[in-house]
Image 1 (cartoon, rainbow, N blue to C red):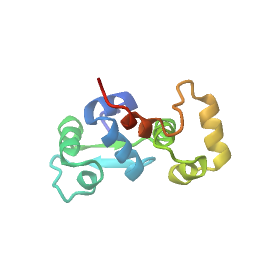
Image 2: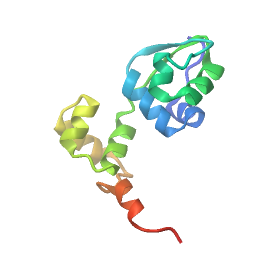
Image 3: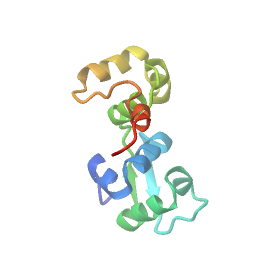
Length: 123
């Protein structure tokens, strides 16, 4: 492993949506990133061809450690309106652990905040 990218660097490289998809598919694992990623490759299917290409161009051929990114994912799931129980299931942790994540979080979104943004037209 010649290069270790931080969470922020991975988000800047691929975008937050692709990063979350990467963590959902491969979080907690070492992941080999080949020099060329075909459209039917597991990475492409998980994060999309464009994000997979950007990742490959920056990293390949190499191995990255994919973070779990539980805090980021929990905030996104909460903003999407998921219950703490559903968030716990998606993160593979207990509901009390989700509560602890949210107690530690300084920038906790309101439940369903992402859903409610679309209710008001932009000026």
